[in-house]
Length: 97
Image 1 (spheres, rainbow, N blue to C red):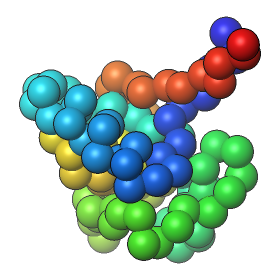
Image 2: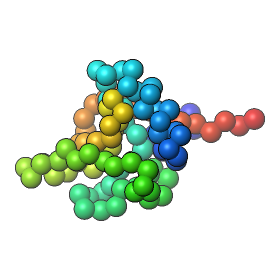
Image 3: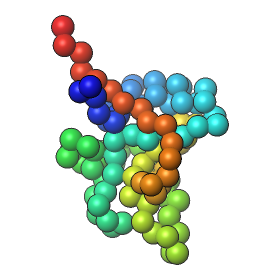
Image 4: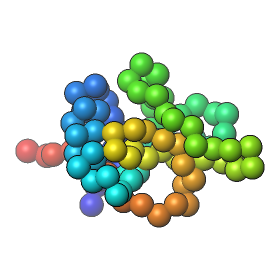
């Protein structure tokens, strides 16, 4: 299909997505941000690093289970989460005109 999990590039895009997911309070949505190990840098699916001034990731990992290496958005808050948790996804696709 040529689509990828969402990469949030700007504050304007973050605000738009936050408004959309806030209307779905019973659901969380995967975005294209992850890391290989707990203390590594967060990377977008295209390999670029997360800009730390765009948003903060709320930690949900515990000492018993520190392996929360994927990210989802729920009611406009962005959390780390276990990659194996089932949920909806937000994808994006570049338009070719």
